[in-house]
Image 1 (cartoon, rainbow, N blue to C red):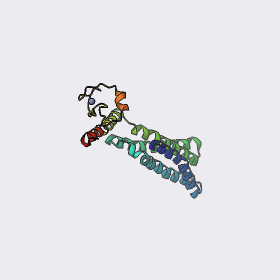
Image 2 (cartoon, protein in one colour):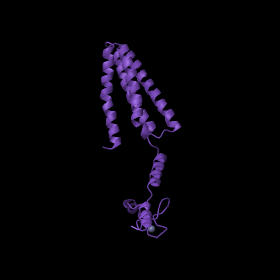
Image 3 (cartoon, rainbow, N blue to C red):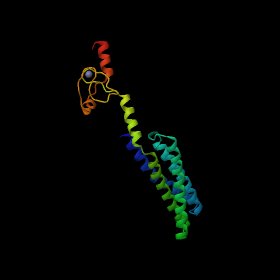
Image 4 (cartoon, rainbow, N blue to C red):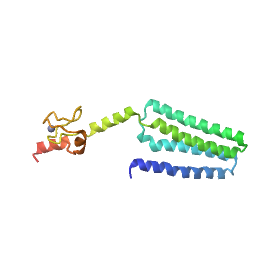
Length: 184
Ligand SMILES: [Zn+2]
């Protein structure tokens, strides 16, 4: 299973576990408003910390992105609290209102953080360039390193290629260098 799919399943599995922890904390407090607020706080902290921990290695952490992530966390808490207060005034049932506020806050956090962490087109180009420089493409005919060229024509032997022909070949410049030096 790809790492990416595993991360998504971990994220999905966290939802029922968080709900279980939430209900457990409410039960420990005997079901009152205080219990719901403590459960909101604990589950909110777990959701924010766990979500960052899950995706941290896949996010390019620029200064702006760190600031936006912090703002996303604060805004989610504000939205959740606001909806909780509004629902309390609207319904007169603060316990249920606090549960609803927590759910909306959690949803907001997942959406806003994902929006902050998405890859920009510039980063996608930079990542592609990085991948290209890590694995140089050698000329399939003579093995000359074609890295950094703006056309698919080998300057060493003059053979022309299409981009997909070059990508399909697995021959690397290093393989050729070795065979040249060892005579194999
Ligand atoms: Zn060549």
